[in-house]
Amino acid sequence: MNANTTPYKVVAVFELRPGTADEEIRRSLEVGGTPTRLAAQAGFISAEVVRIDDDHTMSVQTWESPEACWAALQVVQSQPDPRGPQESILVSREFHAGAVVGTVLPA
Image (cartoon, rainbow, N blue to C red):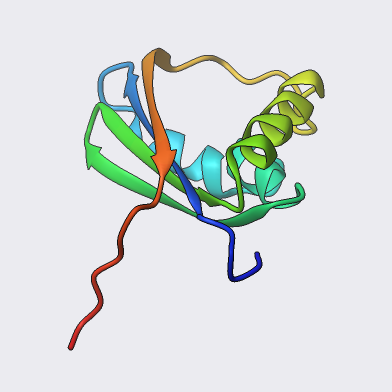
């Protein structure tokens, strides 16, 4: 990322089948999980996986640009899961995204 680029954040909240948040986190963080596959794409900066409660998780991703983010997502979604078929535990997902307009750091 160069000095003139504004980072792009994507926040995804996942509603899961009851009691499956820990399983979703395990799947997300293992090699071949969507976050690890996204991390290999151009423009990826970082991602955090957050446990909200037993039934919800959240992903917070930082990208160099919206174009990099959505191009990477298309690439990953077009590829078969390298781990093979996975039983779906997803009930619904909600995405929010936008350019970073400010950062607060400790004094």
